[in-house]
Image 1 (spheres, rainbow, N blue to C red):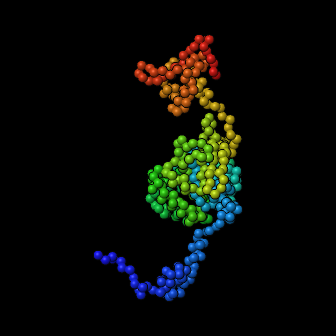
Image 2: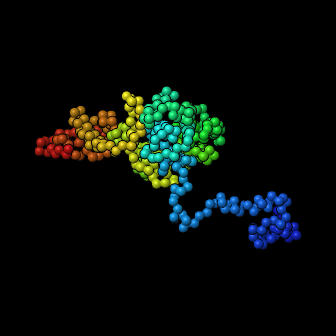
Length: 390
């Protein structure tokens, strides 16, 4: 059986193809059909080379790594790109983003960093949750905190409260593009707060998340703007600059140019630790930030503060456990957790230190009751045996 694709004989091969094969691809066809073909083919090598943006190692070693980055917020947020602000619920994400919006459209710095503020700069803010009244309350106080009047920024702040859009259902993001087209000048930033309220995808699925992130990246490039997503952080994210705060698919990790995240501080309910990692600059932080609200002056400010002097809670919790057992007799781990308001892991750590120790004249013991449940008790010792470890 003969092969369906028969090789051509030499007489059937045009001369310019044979020349190309023998001498290399730099030879163009001998007889182009249109004059434009010649100019187009001549331009191809230079166009392709320009797209590659070649550099040498020697040039790279002496280059300023920030020389191609235009910053909206100096060293923190680029003018064009994608960013995350991540934190657990009630950790100042929205306050921080609203304050950024006031800084871009109004006056002042942001987290102590200078803003390259364009004349008449605008911002588009998509509030995926909350009420208009609560949003107005926050914005009014942030304006007052910056010494601004609503008229100073009112026409440049564009809000959409609980918009009826689903990013996963529209790969071109047409409603979002239509909103951007309607605003002059083009917004310096597009803020989606929070991301999870504006799509129906499974955030743990790379196949479902990737198209959303790709569409938002394309939106940033097409409109030369900064896209910022508010996102919940993962549980047990770890601490410090090596933490992984982004909940969901690993696709989130490679998408952003800037990642700002907030962490709580044990023993301090109002102060947050803020850090940032950037694709094109050194990490920022940690710094301690706090929301300072004055009902009398009707102001709100995000302030950088000194690190709080927090009492070691583990010491006070150990005392609470001992006092509880001495006063009420043997208790289960669950009863102790409910008493001192801690997690199972925290109680396990506390009891591993206490069991077998003598505290305030009593030895802390773990025993099994008649039903097979482990309970803890404080057994008083004689005066001679007493060792007060605290």
